Image (tube, rainbow, N blue to C red; front, side):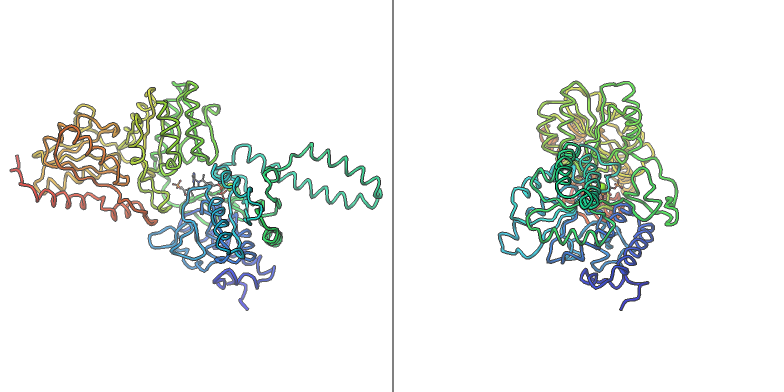
Length: 632
Ligand SMILES: Cc1ncc(C[n+]2csc(CCOP(=O)(O)OP(=O)(O)O)c2C)c(N)n1
Ligand SMILES: CC(=O)[C@@H](O)[C@H](O)COP(=O)(O)O
Ligand SMILES: [Mg+2]
C-alpha cells in the first residue's frame, strides 16, 4: 500500500487512481497542487489553469478509462495534471524546455494525449469526429470526452460543433465545461452571462429541492401541488431555461469542480445517459494557491519563474517589450484619432490593449476567443466610419484569414492588424509560433505589411498604418524585450540603408528584427573580403520598387525573415525582382516550413540556420560559385 507522502509518484497510469480511498484522493490532490506550484515556479508555465483542474482531472481519470476512452483537452494548457496522472510527473523539471515535457498534450509523449494544437475552441469538433468514427467503426464501447473552458466556449467552432453534436441524440459525447469564469480576464459576452445564470439558477434549484422536501410533509399533497405549480411558473419566469437544454443537450450541473466525488457521480451519470451530455463543472482558476487565487489580472494564467512562497516574479523586472511600445503608440494615436477603436480576442493585456482600454473603454472591444468574429466585426466597424485596430497573436490570425481576405481586403477597408508574437516564440510549441502570417498575408490583395526592426520603427510604422484609409494594413513584431534602436545610415527612396561598405557583392534585405542579424552578417562578410549593403524596407508589402535597381548592382541578394520561408517576404521580393527584369540571384533565409518542437527562441533560430554565422557561410558558399570581384 503506497505511503501517503509519496502517493503521487505511485500513480503510473490512470487505473492506479481507482484503488484510492476518498482520504487518499484528498492527499493526492494536495500533492499534485504542491508539485504544480513547486515545479512550475521553477520552469514557468500555465500554473493558474492547472491548479483549477486538479480534482476535475482526478475524477475524469477515475471514471473514464483513457486511452480506450478518448479525452480531448481544449487548448491544452491545462493538461499538466493529466500528464502527472499518466506517468509523467517526474518529467516536470524540464517542462516547456527543448527535449523536455511539452506544455500541451503531445502524441509523442503519451497514448493518453490526442490534440497538440494550442489554438482554443477545437475540442468539441475533435470530439464530434471521434464520436462519429466510433459509431461508424462499431467502436461504441469507448467514451468520447471533451474538456472545454468557459473561455474556449466563446469560440465559434464550439458552436459549430455543438450544432452537430446536439443533432445526433444517439451519439454519445461527454462535454465537460470547465467553468472558472475566466479566460485571462473574466470571460465576456452573453454565453458567460448564461453560465453565470446557470451557476446561480442551479443553486437556486437545489435550494428549491431542499425547500420542497421541507414543505411537502407540512402542507400535505393538495396544497403542495398548487404551490408547486405556482412555483414552477415563477421559476421559469425568473430563470430562463439554459442554452444547453435549448439545444437539446442533456445538462448535468453545475457540479462543484473541486469535489471529486460529486464529479465522479456526474461523469458516471453522463457516461450512462448516452447521447450528448454537458457536465458543467464550476472551478476556480489558481485554486488552492493564494498568490494565484488573489492575482487580479489573470489568476496566474501563465507565469515565468516565481517565488513559490509568495508568487513574486524572480529575476530582473521585465524589460520594455515590443508589446509595451505598441500599447503606448496606440494610446498616443487614440488621443488624436477618435475614430480609432481596438479589438482583442480575450487577450486585452497580453496584446498590449490594457492602457488603451483604460483610456478609451468605450472604444475597446473584447469579443472573447473569437478571432474570426473580431476581424469581420472590425470590417463592420470600418464600414461604419471607424478605423479598427485588431490586436492578435500572429498565429491566431491563421484562423481568421478568410475574414481578413474577403471581409476586410475585398472591400478595401481601413483595418489595421497588429500581430504580436510574430516569428518563433518557442516555449508554447509548434502551434504558437507566428510563422505563417507573412506568407498568408502576401496573398491578400491591397493589404500592406510593415515589419519594424526596433521600437522606434514600430511607433513610426504603426502611425503610418493607421493613417492608411484606403485599405488594410498589418504590423508584426516578435515576443519579448524590444531591442535598442537601429538607426539608418542613409535612405534610398523608401529603404533604410543600415550598412554599406566595400564592393557591391551582396544586397542583404533584413526584415524586421532580423535586421540586427543582418548587420552581424555584413561584418562577417566584410571580414572575408565580401562587400555588402544592408537595407530594411520597413514596408515589405508591396515590395519597394527601389529594391530592383539596388539589386541589379549587386551579385547576390539575400533576404532574412522570421517567418516560414515558403511564400514569405523573400519569395515576394524574388518575384518582384524578376518582374522588374532583374536577374540577380536571390537566396531567401527563413524558418523551415516545418512544425517546430518547443524550445527557446534563440535555440530554434539557431537550429533553423538563422544566425549570422550560418547565413554568412551559405552566402560565401553561394558566391564561391561566382567570379569574385576585386575588393574596391
Ligand atoms: C484561437 C486562440 N486564441 C487565443 C488563445 C490564447 N489563450 C490561451 S488560453 C486562453 C484562455 C482560455 O480560457 P478558458 O478556455 O476558459 O481556459 P482556462 O484558462 O480558464 O482554464 C486564451 C485566450 C488561444 N490559445 N487560441
Ligand atoms: C495558452 C496560450 O495560448 C497562451 O497563454 C500562451 O501561453 C501565450 O503565452 P505568451 O503570452 O507568454 O506568449
Ligand atoms: Mg476559463
